Image 1 (spheres, rainbow, N blue to C red):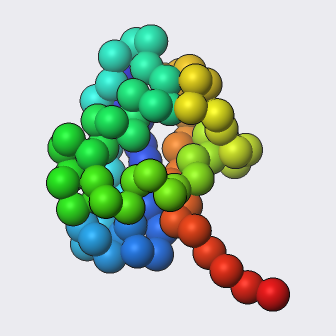
Image 2: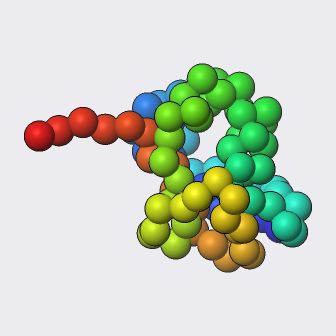
Length: 81
């Protein structure tokens, strides 16, 4: 399946794009998506351990399955106060 992944802040800057289309297996999880991103885009690999992943605008766990048509967003750590 093909999934659109939105990238924000340092992730976007690392590859110069705000979104990418990623091909995944039909039973892919968030963990598999992160692994595939790191292999496909090596510039993202050092940033991925600290990202939060949102699927359909809700934070996702690593074992959550991704479905065709899901909106996936990667959010780097952010601070504030």
